[in-house]
Each structure stands twice: as structure tokens, then as C-alpha cells.
Image (tube, rainbow, N blue to C red; front, side, top):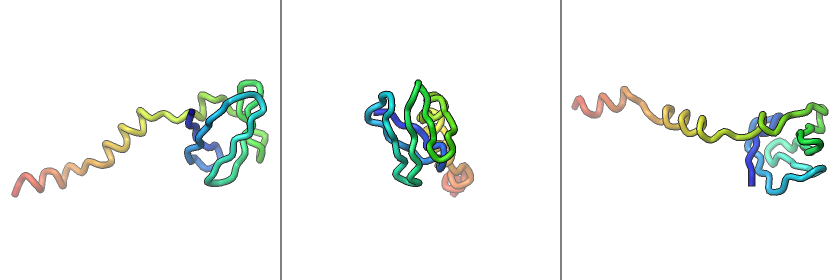
Length: 81
């Protein structure tokens, strides 16, 4: 299983099987991608994407989520009391 980012809406799209001619549909916006010649083709616009460009990078997301969760002012206020 692989997760890519929908080029239309940015939501996660789960890929169970990746083979020539497979159609992949985004559950959120309904965009359809076809995998041909090692590239994804977005049917709405015929735009082509390399699989590497759409792959979900979990390492960056984890760092961003962690930083967003920390509120340093709140932390300081708690320990100053």
C-alpha cells in the first residue's frame, strides 16, 4: 500500500495496487488518475505527474505536527506559577 497526495485537492489517496492502466480515484474530490508509462495522468486536465512528486512524505508531516502542538508561552506560564 502506498499513499500519494491528490494533485487536485491535496488530500491523501491510498493506492493498493499500482500497475499499468490502473485508475485511482480521490475519495474527497473525485479526481481520477491513471497510471501509464510510469507517470500519473490527471484525467480532468491531462496533466502528468511523476510518482515521486505525489508521494506522501511522512517525516516532514510529523515534524510540522509536533511543532504545531507546542505552545511555548503556555508551557512557561504553567511553570511560572
